[in-house]
Image (cartoon, rainbow, N blue to C red):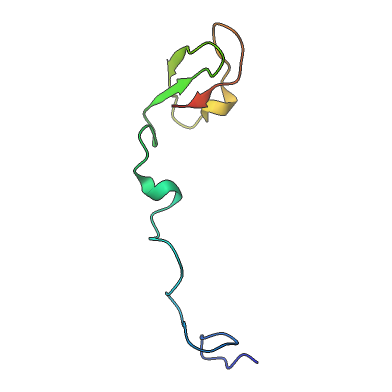
Length: 71
């Protein structure tokens, strides 16, 4: 039964003892992450500059029309 002290039903733990470092996905250090970077076509290898605010998976390759991925 919860005790109302923030430790949960099993006691111990408390707040702030969760997993992870709190830096977001992939610890924020993945090359190509952020507003700059490159979108890559997995089918033909074409590369285009990543446009800020537009995910690469929403872009189509200018050569073959395949959906692009983030490099």
